[in-house]
Length: 289
Image 1 (cartoon, one colour):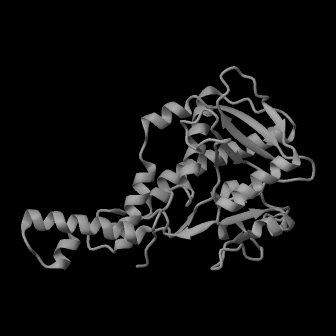
Image 2 (tube, rainbow, N blue to C red):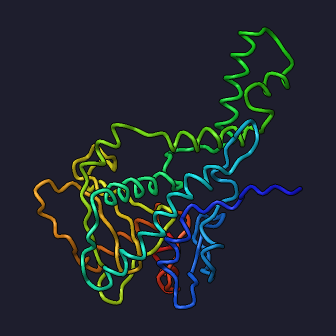
Image 3 (cartoon, rainbow, N blue to C red):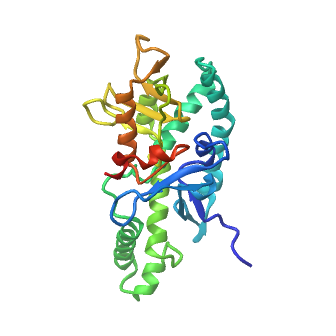
């Protein structure tokens, strides 16, 4: 029987994409080509955009499994599905969402998972195959030291179920990305939620970076007191997580056009896939750099 395992893994949740669709439920989508330039935009449904085959596939009992995609990210996406439409309805009414304390923590945690979910989260990453080959070499060496010299095929199979280097490396990458960090959780608890709106007739672009880590002149890590985490929730609005212990930052701020342009260019520059309800925005010359 053919495998029921999900193989199309969305790196940008479809529910988030739906917030950026046009009146017919489509988005204008563009991805970097072999020349590292964004392709001519084409119109797609969210199902057909922002996905990578087997990106979150791991090994369960030495077999390929989509449990991370279905269970972990499935729960994350369900939370966004319950939350994003309500937030955007309130924001369209030019009001600040009133979010319960427990939901606020869940939202903050989910946004950080979005930042980790992006293919750009791991810096200087050489790929699953390289990572898997390194792991297999280390296990091979250890097995030879413990059990003595054996045939290469037997040694490689030990502990990995005979899976390819790509499958082994992918499993290591995915599970490492999901590991909790008490230090990160403590730093995240210091962040407050604020909202920004796009200027009239202007829009945020959607990128596979999803949540932008901005250092404001410093490193883009949580240890930087000026660290901000931006995540657009619609063409018109973006949530911003930042440190504001004295409650000095306005709950809802409208961006200047120049600032919005910087945010969109940052998203396109750091990402490899972008989309919008507007073909013109995705086709902008600045997106081609």
